[in-house]
Image: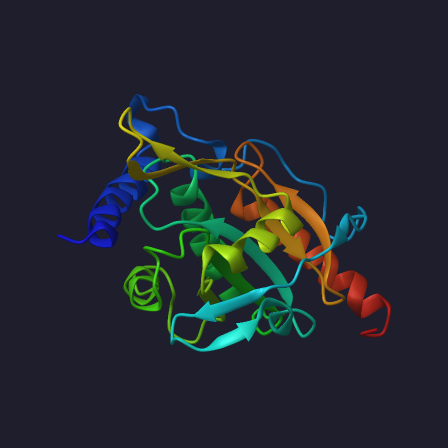
Length: 228
């Protein structure tokens, strides 16, 4: 069984666990229903937090492009992952929530053609385009604009990580051998159509309902400005 398939088995069990109410496990809030009523979309502002960084990436079809090419025409939800991540409140949470966002956006006539999801791997050695294709088929629904990306090398990856302030550290055993796992902080970025970061979600705040509310807020802001 490949590492991606092993992860998917774990992830499917995790989804069932989340649906059943966690079964006593300590899961991030994003696995359960939102515990508060969010303010109405458009009733609050999301100040710009900076400009989304660019960099050379490869999609799951093996095509090379600039990350910046995926900004500008749609609202973007960008999350950093690696497919072998075993921390249930790390990458699996990001993919779980993004799948729920994908489903919610598909049901929303104001958003279904306005949103792009991006899962960008920070493990270019293992997460080849083929590995990402295998991973993506368990999450990406037909017709969804969900891009699964890697980078051509560690050298190409580093400026992207630095640009987003994404911390990632490889773990080594007592003999100095890379274990295949990484320590990292979950960060998911909301990017507007001007390529500006408008929110950053961490483990405790990443929730599909919150993200969709923010997406609606940015779309309403855009509409109020006449699409500018």
